[in-house]
Image (cartoon, rainbow, N blue to C red; front, side, top):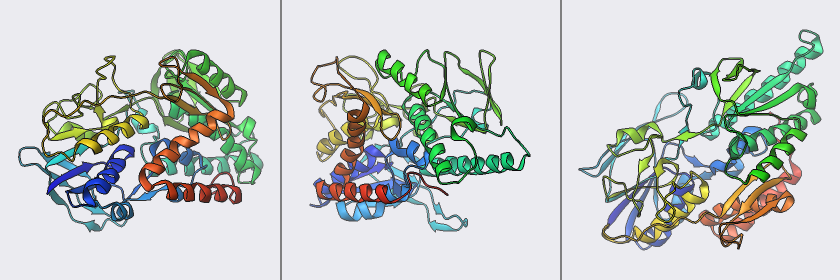
Length: 437
């Protein structure tokens, strides 16, 4: 019985483990092992909602151990530290608790086929001070740290304004990068500031005293969308009171400001870096060929260029589409399609002459707050080939929510997805719109 090890439990890795477990593990045709440094999974496109307090991660997280038990695969808690490709063994580091005590020892896992699904980390592009003075949204813990810091600052500045110690006290949030993450977070933070004021968590005027600014190097926000849609999205952000600065890159970041290369200084109590991603550091320790963003180069069948027994999917990989010669973007839909593809081919005994993976771009949807979204649907959903169908408003918001439900469906099945949807809807009706503490 062959052993298939999947390193990384993100959107692609967990879905692949679930599909392989149901297809091969259930019938004991293969041993499926998932390795991740966290005990729980959350869909990464939701992290901006965790950071804004709109979403409670404990409600939406998936316990890897429970998922493994229900879908016939094994879960190993730990971080991959190295891979011996000659011996086909990976090293998994020890796990430690918050008290520093070792919870699980390090171990070695043998594999017949290895799938690398590490995801990606924030790319600071060598900007001075960016790594030291910026927060990121690479994990749930980082998103929670951002939320807690925002709430604390709002409370502190409100008290200073009321006491007269700082009559003009304001909270300045600067988001670097106007891709989907930066834009979605900015829109959610606007509603968070108003919700916290409504529940008397802070004494600031959310429209006047909580200033949100997006700094983007490109000439417009949301470069993945049609130019007209991007302009409409920018106008909507401005109507919310969010400042948008485009056409200027970041020169340096300090503890209290972001300096752009046009000489402007943007005051900042919290700087969130959302300007790009790269492969995690472990990718450089595997002896595999990488691109300039430290992503693993893969061939048409998602096998790494250097080792046909090792595959890579998701944001840690670089796959060039054989149809148009473009690099597949780091999106959840790409990881999903790659997981579906590998689930259908990894059960075969050999690795020679595997079919080629074909990526289909179904478009992009971007949330602009609780009630609004914009995007373009392409392919079967848009029914207009590569031209696409423009969607916005409530319809786009509904479709945006369905993307997450599709992920839940892939992990838990239809009945569980419906039950979770109803449960989350009821909870949203009864609970405050954001986490208050």
